[in-house]
Image (cartoon, rainbow, N blue to C red; front, side):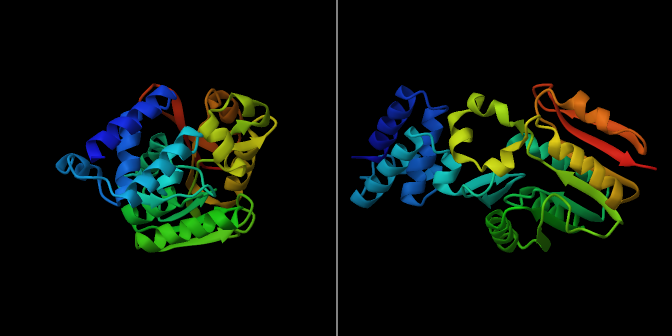
Length: 274
């Protein structure tokens, strides 16, 4: 079987199973089986697929057909132009989360905490883009292992601390607190995509019965840890803008809402000025 034939057959299998972007997914999985980049598939389309590569490719297709996200199969996800390692212990970084980074970069912070850092995508990116002093927190020890590995591979000096939200942070002179927090209500579990519901870590998805529990804790803790004039930047869940803005009462100024490419309110930034 040639690479071209393997690619066509894989894409057909995925399309028949209603898997999103079947051609691209087949390309990524075949390239992963070959340990090559996707361009190799087209430069060597008539090359025979080895038995070993066919076994790996078949397993990857089977896993994807069962719902396992492509990123967990390959162990990789690009974020802000860099490749991050991902495992089922961490949330897969989404393109829209890059808006959190872009918003934060405009604020000129020198001391930053990323709450619920997961893979370390935000924390590592902010360190590399700004050379600021960055700390990442997460309640999951397994997630922090992934984050530390990403920081090491990308040569980013980031400190990581295991704690619930900001419980272990005592320094009240932070310039910026950023977070892509859990914001899915527990009752919405059944409505999530299978790939998300069955494979991504629950602690990174579900905030509690309302979905706003972590937002409230972040607002409360940020008022304790931010210096005067410091900023809180958070990713917003769908339809969460108004409820989160209601939490920003005394002491919060210059509240900004940043929409994503679809026009959906995606990021909230607020300045602490008591």
